[in-house]
Image (cartoon, one colour):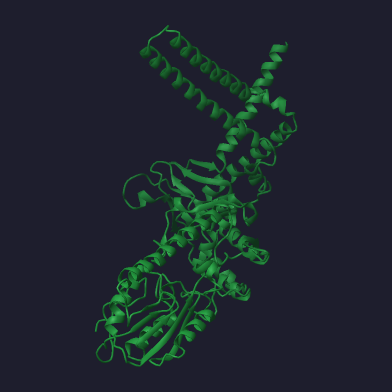
Length: 571
């Protein structure tokens, strides 16, 4: 006969291969019985009474003294759900039934055999009768050899109740997991490389200092221009245990079907997985996969917006800035130099000033040396634009000059902002941006009073309903516009306040390179957003944190303007 399997339930239906013909249920037969017991976490408070040993004691007690039943085997699945039938001992029992070694199955109750209403119906109404199997559920008083008139209604109903119990349990568990995720509690069975579970609270992570140092090195190497393969090679050369080997050394039972060698090594995929994991920047993301329902165990990916993201700064191993920078670099088309583990100095940073496409590197060999130029990729493909050709030497000198100049400017701004930061807060609030905020607040209050007077005029009969509706719409629109403007001003002030001290991260980013002697890949990607090349060798270097830099300049200029105005008033 044809053997078809339901993918998720694991139950064979309609298809019963067996040696010989199916026998009929008749009295006087010596029944070769299998005792079956099952227990899972879903049994909750009934776990003690439903323990495997208690089930087997009950079943042995039931068959004791029954002359027509001979127990030939005992099967037990401890820790397996009743929703599906992918259980080791259950499958063994089914195989024994099909070869004719068993023709009687005895369980404590229907839920021990399974909690899937549809599949239980197929078992009891089709499979067992076809195979001539006698089925006994002790607690329900059900015996398929001697059924009564109500069994046809009660048994399906009890199966439905057992199924509903699983559905309710599944909903509760999913809800509990979602609450834990939103509370920032870790619920995964295994932790990411660089972390370990707190022995006192398995829903909290602790940083594994040794592995965390490797993670920091991986990010630093990527910023320094190394490829994923180059990073993997360096780690393997240094003998650093891969994430899988690290788990094994720490007693984890984690296994993967993708391991090809006896000892797992670092691969570009493993390195890329670390570089893309937000957890290293202190963002715990959970719930990336789920199952359609409690019966179907196939994993499916959830949409990004449906996943739970919680900022857990205590879990941060690298800065959010470095994480963002690295993932920007991963999205760029940066090819590794032939025979090298690192990318070229300006890889992924050069853009055409006309078409906006990347510039590509071109070697022009001469009699004495190899000259390197960068040209527009659109032009090279013959699809228009101009060459925008610039030699790497000229490019290097121009970029180095502009970067060092910008570093000096940032250092001066840092000194000015540090001085301003020591001033009393009321003096800073007296500046232009604060006066704009106060004026806007007054405007909002004025519009509010107008709306109140408008209603009073309408209530006193000084205007009709149409006039009131039209004027109210005008005042409401003005009030909304003023509120939005006020919100933007408040945000601008907040940005300025956070950028006025020498602890501003963007300034520290540039001050780190105040003694820069030559351009390195790290300096290029950390200090520069992009380099735009125009025809004729003109270039524009767009620094990182450009908006912060311009905000700081405007703030300092506003202070200078206010100071000059005060001096003139005093004269």
